[in-house]
Image 1 (spheres, rainbow, N blue to C red):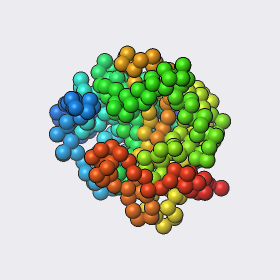
Image 2 (cartoon, one colour; image 1 turned 60 degrees about the horizontal axis):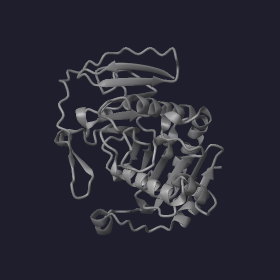
Image 3 (cartoon, rainbow, N blue to C red; image 1 turned 45 degrees about the vertical axis):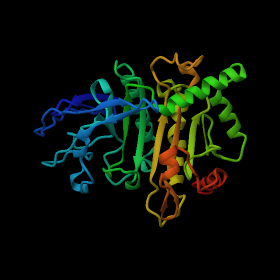
Image 4 (tube, rainbow, N blue to C red; image 1 turned 60 degrees about the vertical axis):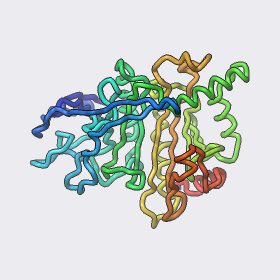
Length: 353
C-alpha cells in the first residue's frame, strides 16, 4: 500500500491509498473553494447522559446529485470533484459538511473505488484489503488527535438508509467522547467481569453463539453470527476469533482472511430477498475500544473490548422496511419481526457456490 497525503483547495486533507507503490499523485485541486466554515457543537443531554451534535451547516450539503455531477468520482477534464486525480484506488478526505469538527472531533469520507456504479460487494479481495488498511491507518492517525476519544468506521448503503450520494463510500467519525452504545457495552463488561471473577463478556458471547444455531459462517480467523437478541430483521455480527480492541491490533493472518469473509457476508445480504429486489440497504458499523480513560468502567481496560462489525439491514421482507416507530424511537425498545434463528438460516441458505 502506498499512502499519499495532499490538500484540497479549501485546506481539507485528502489521502490516496494505492495498491501500487509506484503510483504518483500530485494533481492540484483546481476548484475556487473558500475555506470550509463549520458550526459543529456537541451538547450533552443531562437527563439521558448522552451527546447530540448540532451542525446547522449540514443543511446545505450535496443531496442526490446526478451521476455526472457526483463529487466522489475522479475529476475528468473540466468536471472537477472532491478527488483531483483522474483515477484512484481508495481515497479518504475530510468531510466538507462534517457533523463533528475542530474541538468537537473530525469526520472523514472513505471512497472505496472510483467506479460509481459498483458497491463494496463488487470489490476484489485485493481492493477490500486496501479499504481495511485505510480504515486501520485512519484509526491509528485519528487516535493521536487531542480532541478524539473514539474512532468509528462505518458504511451506510442505500437511499432507504438516508444515503444522499450514490457512489460507493463510507465514513469515519472521530468522536470527542465515548459513544453511548460503547459505554453500555463497557458497563456490561465491567458488571460481568465482577460477577464472574474475571471472565470476559465478549469471549463468553462468542463462545456461546458459535456453539448454537445462529452461526452464519466461520473462517479460521473470523466468525459471523446473528445475535440472540438481534435488534434488526437481518443482523450479523462479525468477530475476529482472537480478541483485539481495535483495527490496528489485528494480526496479518486476520487481515489476510478478512476480505474473503466480509465480501461473502455482503454478497449474502444482496441475495436475502431474491434477485428481483433492489440492492439490500444496510449499515456496516465497526465497534472499536475508545482511546480515552476508562476509570468510570470499574476494572475494564481497552484490551477487554472486542473489535467487531455489526452489519444489518432495515428491510424486513420483500418491499417492506423496518421503521423505528413508537417503541423503538420513543423508548429504545426494539421489536424484531424476524426471529434471529430464521435470519441465520436464511443467510446460510443464500451462501454463494
